[in-house]
Length: 285
Length: 291
Image 1 (cartoon, helix red, strand yellow):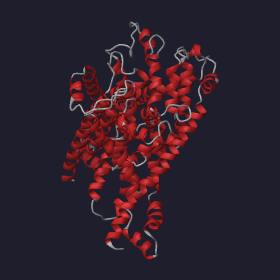
Image 2 (cartoon, rainbow over the protein chains, first blue to last red):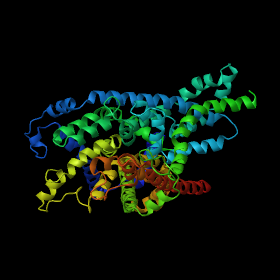
Image 3 (cartoon, chains in turn orange, brown):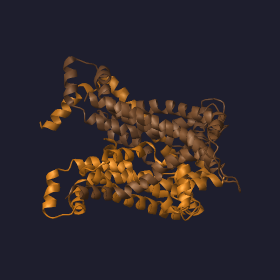
Image 4 (cartoon, each protein chain N blue to C red):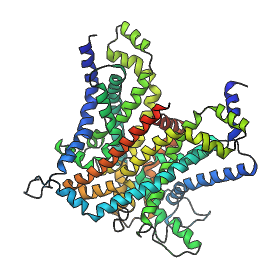
């Protein structure tokens, strides 16, 4: 028996429920899980069956792709997807660069004002751009960026969360590696690129997944700054689609909803472990 | 490297991030305070200094108080419930129940979906006559009820959606903390003959306290930051019964185009978030003392 299995067996001594209690608990857990999945299962049912079965369940109900096809053609979803992909890529690319540079400065330099500067960065963890919508709209208008994809992403590009997360990781890099690189003649930026960035790869992955899902899902700020098909991300597009035309039936709206979450949901189902671990890693400070 | 060169390098590395942070976090927070003392420009009349008038209007505004009260109720209703559920889910997912992978997937999936999309799905649930909930209650012989359309149930409906969406997110932090716990503790408790519930109450739960604090802070911020489902499901109605603070700010700022009054409202939101930040700081300080 190796150490890991030994630890696991020991750990189960108290944690293990017995007999009828265990069966009851398993049933409760499964019931809750099914309840949790119910909204999604229901959405799938509605989206892939003809309208007359939207609220009427029957095993013999025919399956159909009509709702999905109809929804896809009823609004410029292809364009919305392109906008979202541009937005998410742009924000992530900018974040990775800015966050890496700032985190390196905070982790490995001593300079006057460092602690104050770091405290000021952390302010953004509490007061996110999400709540400063009125003033940020004023700023975006003054910059002449209203109704552009850049305007959606700009307030989020310097991410306090990313700086914090990466600074923690950079601090765990042994100083000897840093010094060895310097002796080899590396400039600070080369050291950052060749020593720190490769060692922080898991943190980058975690941060990237969290950032992409955040900006794919973001809604209120894009709703405020965008005003045209060319700039709207898919969340705003979906809202415009389902709110404007009251005549559209639920099968179509549900189909459009599933359509808009499909890429992220598929990615999540395929890389479930990475997603969960990334969110975990990002949450542990 | 000389010291001044090192300082220069550090600040150059910080510069790009600092510019954007100042431009979209610190400057707007200060500018917001400034603008809350001015009137909204109307037509040819520019904004003028009106002192505390916006705040006086705010004190006299019943909708503001309603939104604040709604938000407090919303926070009190969703946070304890989603944290308790998250803890329960984590204990299950971390225990020895059959199909743990499936359970984790089921609990976590709502987290990766956009609030706007899940709000659309839940909107359908709550629809009068056709919605799933109506079908169930009708089947059981209850009278028809417009869940989102009546003042007494609309806010509770939004709270259900929020709990459903957030519990799985908080669960993973508890799972991570449970996995990091030393198995010797369980061993010692087993030798002492401690019951499962006793072990949880006296050992597991106190050890999870830092995680609970972390989750609590996140939950409070989210309760004041996320209003997407209000936009989709109720637009603050009926009769402002579901207006949350940020939604009211959005309405005043971008539907009634009164940015000056919206700035005063935003100050209230900033004070709430600032209070959370200070409380967290105090608690975290205390935590580090006995570690």
